[in-house]
Length: 230
Image (cartoon, rainbow, N blue to C red):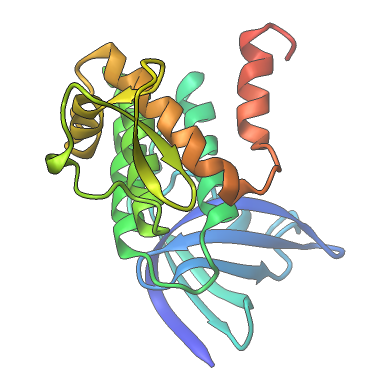
């Protein structure tokens, strides 16, 4: 049986379960994605409901015999990070990526660290969203084995495309991504707008096979809000 005491964690997703409980997806520091049952969490006087909020640094105690464990205790590690507007939508997008793509109970300390950093940056009023999202996507894909190979050997002026089974492949079509774009992405240098555009294209190409044709709900909501439909 797996047990953890006061492990640093963030809530990714929460949904009703049975009469008064909840299913909670959390990103934890040592155990990666953890899925827990919070018994009685939806009762009116249950304090855990107020504690287990998205974007709040938490300390949780839990145990599990299978991929679905039991929440035993939760407390705040520090005040929740306050997101609003597009920041909130971006945060939920990161959350959905994590609980859709990580394997439960597989250690992912680098993803946890990058997630905490990304949420803190989103909460900063002067942060631009796009570089934060691209950096986190890159770190997550690297953990999943879809990272970029060593980009330093690439020719900066040549064009490349991403092939799911082969990775980066040299091509002669100028609509694809240049080597210097890839080098900037690997170095998390998004100062140039063309690098941000290239990173977005490359991220979608790498995410597509992992999402298995199931669109991200958070992205759909974001697009609908931008079109004024929500």
